[in-house]
Image (cartoon, rainbow, N blue to C red; front, side):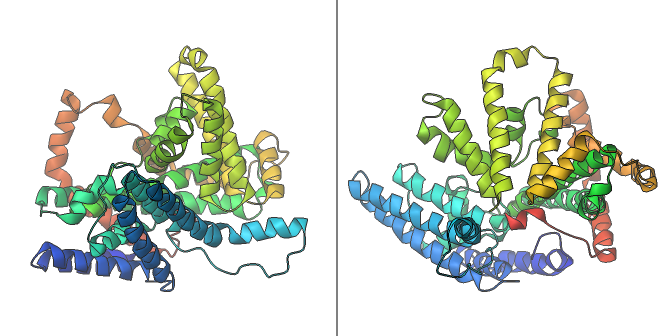
Length: 464
C-alpha cells in the first residue's frame, strides 16, 4: 500500500486516525498505531513482516546489552555484531542476486541464484536501527525499555516505506508520550494534501511523459526530445519523492510526531554540494554522521571520505553497477567543487545554477538506464542525434504549458526569497490561513479525480 492510493486515503487512514484518537490512553494508542503500521506493511507482502519484527526484537535486546556494558569492550563488540547482522540482512535481500550475477560471471558457482525479492522499506529501517544502536553505544541515547514502543518506532507506517530516515533521537520522546495538538493535526492535513497533489498532479504527469519519451523507441529521439525526456524524469523523481516525504511528514503530525524536513528546494541549488544538502536530507545526514565523520570527515583524507560516502550513497539506491557509477559521478564533482571552492564562489549565481541543473539532469540518465548499452545510446542522443523532432513533441509542449508553469512555481524557494519576517510573507501567510481549508479540499479533489480516472500511479522509491 502507498499513501497515494484511494484505499489508503479513504479507508486505511480514517480507520487508523479513528482508533488512535478514541483509545483512552497512550498505551492503547501505541498498540493501535503499531497494529495499523504492521497491517500497512503486510498489506501486499505479508511474509516480510516477520523479517521486520525479527529486526526490531534483535536490535531491542542488543541495545539493552550495549547500554548495560557501556564503557566496556563488550559494548563495542555487541555494537559491531549488531551492525553486521543488520547490514548482512540488507545485503542478502537487496544485493544477493547482484553479487551472485557478478561472481558467476567470473567463476561457476555451485548453487542457484537467490530468488528472494526486495522487502519494502528495508533500506530505510535498516539505517534507522543502525543509527539507534550507534547512538546508544555513544551514550547519546538511553535504550528504549518498552519493546512495544521500540517496535512502533521501527514500524511506523508514516516513514516505513520510503522514509525519511527517522532517528530515535528525533522522536523518542514522542514515541513514549504524545499529546493531542489540533494545531499540529491541522498542519499535518495541509502538508499531506500538498504532498498528494505534488505526487499525483505533477509527478504522475511527468512520469507519463517519461514513459513516452524514454521507454519505448528512445533510440529515435532527437537531441531536444532526449533532453526533454530526461528532464521530465528529473521532475518526476523530485516530485514523486518530495511529495511522498511531504505526505509522511503530514501524517506524522496527524499522529503527534514531528519529522525533520527531507527536501528544501533542491532545484534552486548553486552547486552539486548545495543540491545534496537540499535533497534527501535524512540520507545525507546519516552518511555524514555514521560514515563520513567517523572516517575522518574534513580532518583526515577528506577527498577519500567524500568518494567513499558517494559510492555508498549510489549503491544504497540499488543493486546495479549504474548506481555505483552514479555515486562515482557525484563523488567526483563533489571533490572538484571542494578543490575549486574559491573559484566557484566568483562565478555569477545564474551560471552556477545553470551548471548545477545541467549536471543533475544529465545524471538522471545514469540513474534511469540500468543497461549500459542503452545508457550509451541515450547519452549519445543527448549530445548529437540525426533524428528530427517529432510532430507530437510540439503538441506535448502546448498541452502541458500550464503544467510546466506549475512545476516551475513549485521549484522556486519562495520561503528563501521572502523569509517569514518579510511583509510579503506575512501577508501571504495571513491569506493562506484563511483559505487553507478550501486549498486543501481543492488539492485533495484534483488528486482524487486523477486517481479515479487513471491507473497510472507508480512510486519510484519503493524499489530503493
